[in-house]
Amino acid sequence: MRIGVDARELCGRPTGVGRYLTELFTEWSNHPDAKRHAWTLYAHERPQIGAPWSDSVRVLAGSGGSAWEQWTLPRELSRDRPDVLFAPGYTAPLTAPAPTVLTVHDVSFFAKPEWFSYREGTRRRLLTAASARRARVVITDSMFSKSEIVKHIGLPEASIRVIPLGIRRTEPSSEPSSGTLVRNPREEPSPEPPAREPIVLYVGSVFARRRVDQLIASFDRVVDRVPSARLEIVGENRTVPHLDLEARRRQARHADRISIRSYVDEATLRDLYARASVFAFLSEYEGFGLTPLEALASGIPPVLLDTPIARETNGPAARYVPAANMADRLVDALSDCLSNTAARDAILQHAPGVLARYSWPAAAAATLHAIEEGAGVR
Image (cartoon, rainbow, N blue to C red; front, top):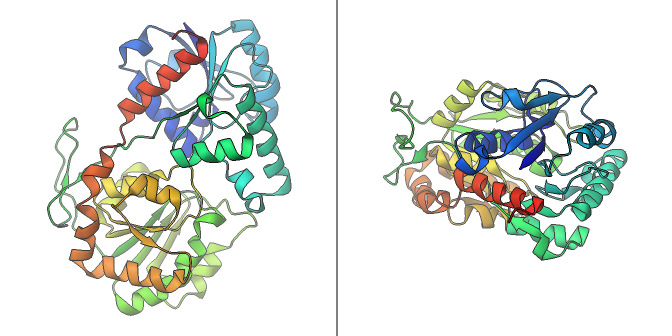
């Protein structure tokens, strides 16, 4: 079978969809069923992907935007005639000459249109809905997102496959939180990790719905209780309308204890995950929410806004902050997790059971099965 893949999200600095696709290709590299298919990856520039996939890349001129997707890519597909097209990032060519398997990670642009500019929100709603209705199979990451797709796009439940994402990080010990991590048995042993420090960590693109500005505003009160506390924020600011987080940081009484970086390399990120004591993620809407689980897998208890998707993905392995009176409850939760070993242990004891649900090998196998289903192979 010939499989085409829209691989644009592997270019540049991959964010959520790029990481998703990278993990799938990592697993497919050694999957016997994947090896029996012929793959072609289409992108607007040379993507960051190694063997054996680098020889399968087709670079098509253009910017990689909607015009590239709707005009350039379908013309190339008409020449190649793949048996199926896998589109991993919400939209697909509406005139693709092949069945489409589409991943829709969330539909926040339907549920909360005020979070997007008029132009961007309209583009996303129109193209995602049309792509999903045309697709033979739609994949999403959670039961919450499935229900939202049914509600806002009107797809029948039978056409949607829920395939949770995986976690590829160190797993926390079930022993009390000493900062010791248990390595994945497939990985080589590594040096002893650094001791946990009073660091509150946030990782992820910064959207208004994730309330990073409110995290900054509350942090002075955390430092009042835990004087050595620090706040590390890592993620590109993609807020609409734009929030000047650096200005919010400068206005804080403890501005010198807050660091904001749009991007760090993998080594720096792993170091932050190894040293932080609590992870803060106050998003009111997600399709899945990967970084809190990555934090949990690195031995960091997450503090999350209490939402249906947070409860679905993290279960008992998190501390939940209600939206009502959020500021006071957030300060209490962060301060407690920074200074109280028992509070951290109460969360981390549930980590093994929760993390067992999330496997990239399982996600890749299920996604390949959905692609084959879309092509009519099964």
